[in-house]
Image (cartoon, rainbow, N blue to C red; front, side, top):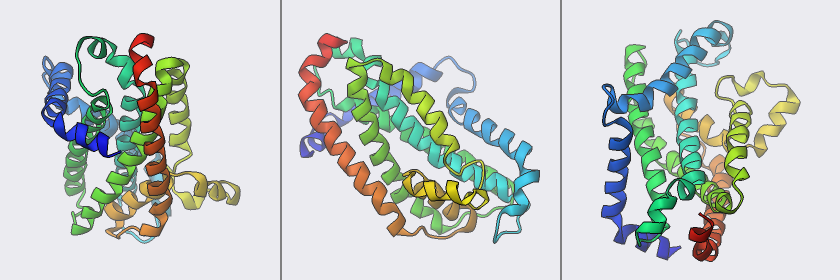
Length: 264
């Protein structure tokens, strides 16, 4: 794993320039530019908030803000967007960069780092936009939000480990790239983002303990809505599973790397 860190550091300028190039390629001729990265999740959250706030806002315990549900929804959306972007970009990173892999000699492990970097940059911009929305809604920002950094880092580790593992498999079995979006859509609705966990029946609530994205999403909601620090104990499984997945994915990547270019 130290080789991964050393390679990323040695090629840090290449990684940063690639992230910048990705932004320019997507938004260079767009009038709104990078704003498109945050408009889609904000629009989705606004639609959910408008449609469901009248039904669910009264069920948010411990807060009297009439905009509690939109705040709750935006908080969960931020956590999920970070996870889904890192994962989806990692799954397709080798297939999408097949031409680059065949033409340029560089450590291929830089590609997942670039994918994660782009996703994190997108989430930072989304966070800034959400903070602006919070201020408009009269919901103040607190120092407790600094907890978003370690919790977000755990999400990235988990998403990158799972995404890199699936990304290597996707090179040899392209069905993986087709199945992942379906699973992600199902996973989204199995995670309390649009709804609150306390409205689930007992059978549904018992399944949440197996959903590794529930603790970080819940932590984001507690931090941003209630200003409460997360319980570190609940995040330990995410750290352990994420670290194991990242180690397994890296070993698999090293073994499959010589054959990947031929398959691409």
